[in-house]
Image 1 (cartoon, rainbow, N blue to C red):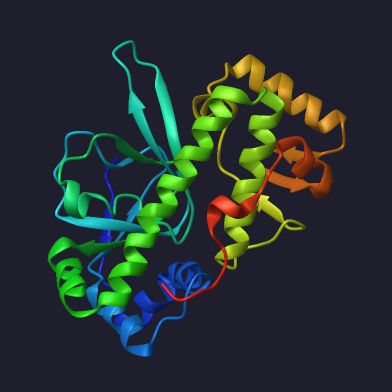
Image 2: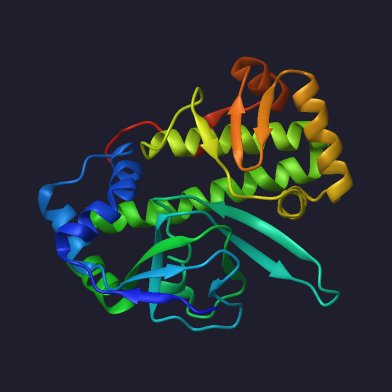
Length: 255
C-alpha cells in the first residue's frame, strides 16, 4: 500500500511539528524567527500505513522526513532475509535528516504504525543552514543525539542481558516521549511494536523476548497488554537497566 500526500496550511504544519519544537527547546530556546523558518521550510504532509517503507536503502531522497504522529524504525535487511532494527523513531524525530548531506540511504525506514510525516525539502534545509546559524546547530544536535542513542544501543547489544536490554529500551522510550510532551513514566503508552520487532531491535529471538516479557510481568515491573504498556515500578526498572538519561542530553543550555 502506498502513502497519501496531503496539503496543509502553515498553521496546521506548526501543530504537526509541535513535538519537534518541544524536543529542540528542551535543549535550547528557539526564537520566533527560527520557529517560523522551520514552519516555512516544511513541504507536504504524508500519511504512511503500518508496514510501509518511508524510504529504502539505496534511495537518494531530496527531502528529509519528520515524524508528526506514529512510530517508525530504521532497519537493515541481510541477505538471508533477517532484519536488524537500529533505531525506533517517535513523534518529533527526523528519520533521515542525515540524507541532507549523505545523499544515499544506507538503511531503510519503515512505519511501525500508521504515521503522519512532515517532509522538509533539502533545498529548504540548505536555506536554513545559510541563514540561521543557531538553528543549523540545533539540527546538527539532532543528528548527534541519534549517534548517542546508537552508541547506547551498541552497549546494550554487546553487554546487557535480555532483561536489561528490554528494561533499558522501555526507559528510553518513555523518557523520550516525556520530552516531547506525549506522556511520562506514569502514563500508559501505546507502543505499536510486536515481539518479533522487539527481537529485531534487541538482538533476541521471539521466544527469548516472550520469556523476558513474562519475567517482567511476573516481577510486577510492567503491564503490557496488546499495544498498551504501563510501567508499574519505574525505580526498579531503572535500576535493572542501569538507565542514565545523560546520553539523551536533556539539559537546556546555549548551543
